[in-house]
Image (cartoon, rainbow, N blue to C red):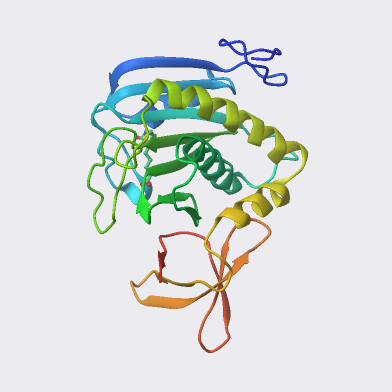
Length: 251
Ligand code: BTN
């Protein structure tokens, strides 16, 4: 889908954004994966569900999806010279951060590796990337009106932080910002996105921990990102390790 204007008339260089909303589905990511398998979905298409009956989170966890929040998915085509697909996590995280910031200009917010956005130190969104053939499905959930429980996490929503908007309006802004950042990612490279992300993330030197494949805790200080977006952690003995998957806790 190529053009110079999206449906609402906003100029988005050469890409037409099309948003389709359904009342309910199991998972917008599952639906987008089916479309991608069939080769029948183009970049710029966004699917939103008012509620999901089988929302999926990272690491196979369920994603509680009551009415009132945003549940949406889009696809990104992978071209030969594009940055690593996993780096789209940072594009999505930055896009969500930017839109939330527009509603909450004075609130404490940080980006947390790999794609969390923390508002008042609590989780407000979830991002799930899934590869299908030469496309990446990018699924985004944002707590707009309600803050469903997430095990072991403090959770908040835009409403709880004092912002009034709806999921549809949020997605209009998000799709626009996402497509702009995607253009930057493709044309200027992941390094540019990474630099913007680092400005808004936990500072280098922050103490954090994660667990290895055997569940053993690994702690250290944040030492930046590798060129492809892995987290660098400096352990107390000075060893530098790279983390490519999993969750981290700050502090
Ligand atoms: C996470 O565990 O933090 C990621 C959650 C991703 C949830 C979104 S909601 C829209 C899309 N559809 C899904 O089933 N999952 C993603």
